[in-house]
Image 1: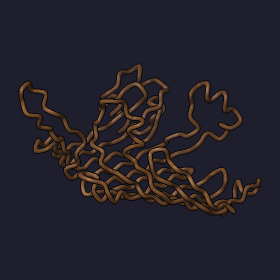
Image 2: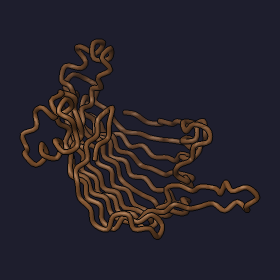
Image 3: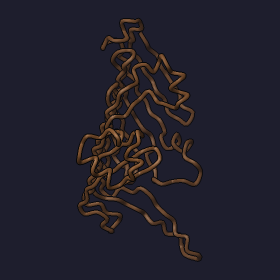
Image 4: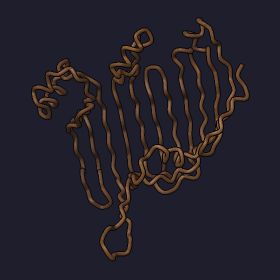
Length: 255
């Protein structure tokens, strides 16, 4: 039995929890081995500013206090995290922000919303079976135990402010320019090696955006179809209705 779990964060906030865990060889595969509940709050803005380099503020963050509840359940070696969060004091594009994050052995699901956006994402994952046996070798090669297999994303924006720029004209009164986006972005992609693609549609799209040397390589890429509907930047219409293919790798982005 676990009780009296308490963590006080340096930038403010507190996490408390209790539950039970069955720690033994049998618990590694038993779905009821863990049942732990955590709840609390953090000051997200202060935490993020610790990791954002000075002078960079691409997204105006006015989230404030983040309240959340987390349930940790499942086998010891395949735990499942079910996180529900809300930001009651958030402002501007994050007003009424709330969401749910599920992290399981074979997928990660993120559903979030506010007055300015709705985000639904599912990432299919797997793990290297022998990672624990050859951990040092994988770490030397900088190979992560988590393998991303596919990504499904659906984002709707309703005047979502992602940047603001102050006027730099001499002798001009500072007037920040607010950049707000509206529209819908959908993406469905799989992680593949171009040399092993069997889908003619995907292979044809890769041929049109990649040279032959990269097409024959064994470097994994996230490849899929992207759809843009009614994408506007402030009053400027950028993509009324567009579809295409998107390819992402460690060294390049191709559309």
